[in-house]
Image (cartoon, rainbow, N blue to C red; front, side, top):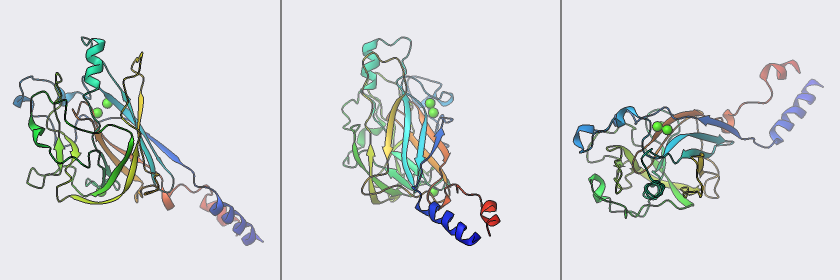
Length: 274
Ligand SMILES: [Ca+2]
Ligand SMILES: [Ca+2]
Ligand SMILES: [Ca+2]
């Protein structure tokens, strides 16, 4: 009888729909380990190596959601305003910023495993080390499907010919945080095959009457080509920034997914039924 009851409970558990677990995260990162700005190398000195963000935006954190795999990563983005910026300058600065790639270390071992490539068709990255106006860089920010690739670069990569990243660009009238990885280099030996596509919600437009509310930016992995991303250890590390590296995210989050999801029936209670 006890085994019959146990079988009923197990059957109900197995038939139960998967539920989503959400993990919120903040932003405790100024720059990725090994990538401080070489401040002395640039005309306008700053204290970027001690500031979370400057100018705009402030990425305040976000939420990672998982069921049988990683469903989505959402960032909360505040379009911050410097005290001496006019409304027009504020808008203009925002419209020359672009999202970086989304880097994922799905076992948090210091080596990336995947990257969402935001500019898959871009081949000419030549003006990466420029200190001139660069508003026509041809980068993507629109909503849509973007390719998810395997990407096995170490977070702290040696500066060699196989260097895996493209770094900060400088838009007109804006002092960026230089020397920081922003996008993966699709031509590097670290870039692997595409394994699916991820739905990007789009970079926020500048809302009318905006008063620095957090704006959501979401990468959705529950697409027809992917249906979630396996996180084998439940520890996911997320890397993300913007084209100026004005604010940098490197955050480890605990996400329950697949057969490692929390069990709704505790093991001791199940044993009592036998
Ligand atoms: Ca921040
Ligand atoms: Ca890894
Ligand atoms: Ca930060």
